[in-house]
Length: 302
Image (cartoon, rainbow, N blue to C red; front, side, top):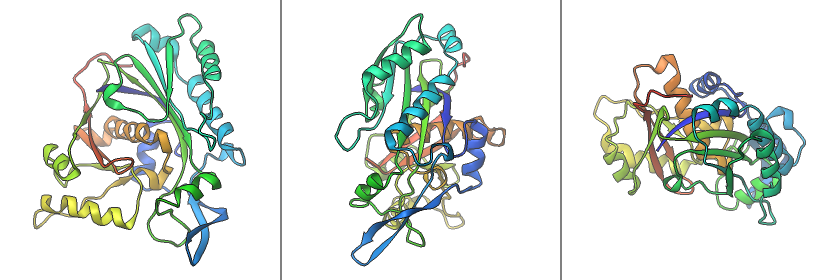
């Protein structure tokens, strides 16, 4: 799949260079919550999260709506539609506690009509991005906010949540991302459909390659990852040092895959990475998956 990153917003800002800088330098935007969550039978503690300061005190639906509106307002649709075909818009949005989308289709239709009045494309709303089924000339817009007490408390039933002074766990965040999937995209995503140890072998990884971890952090995952990669080390190799997406900007739910791809794009576009031709992005939720993001050979870019 080839794609271009059109726009994003998260705690690091909305510029590709600021996204790279924040993660490469391990800048932290997180803070502890005022509410306590139950970590185990003997401990209640504040959870650590990353929010967009402008959205403080708002509910999840309002946060998602404002992030989505901001994304759409900042895409140069005239330029995009003049240079490329946009046959479809794929919205990747979360569902609320009532299992209903946090933003309904009528609202999405109105936003698109206002943004592209001349020729509004068809759209679809999903809560899970199936990369292999995404057709060319699709605009993917992914939004989520995962910082509410209700969301984190429910998540804590299945995953280790990062709490103040606690062991490694999930730090939740929020953000939005717009990517255009098309045959002239400057970035190429390669997938490997096997168990993780075989994916690493098929990708011919070197421990010196740049790796981005965009999954859910935990002590158990750290041990698992080392067991997967141990055979790739030579005697004088240093341990793989992940660029940690979610430690910096927070886990972003249904938008997390788009966030990982956007971060990889910001790495490859940065002058400091000019000699690097690819970045590996690693996820462990919902499945363990390795992606190789590389520069394509296409000459027509946005």
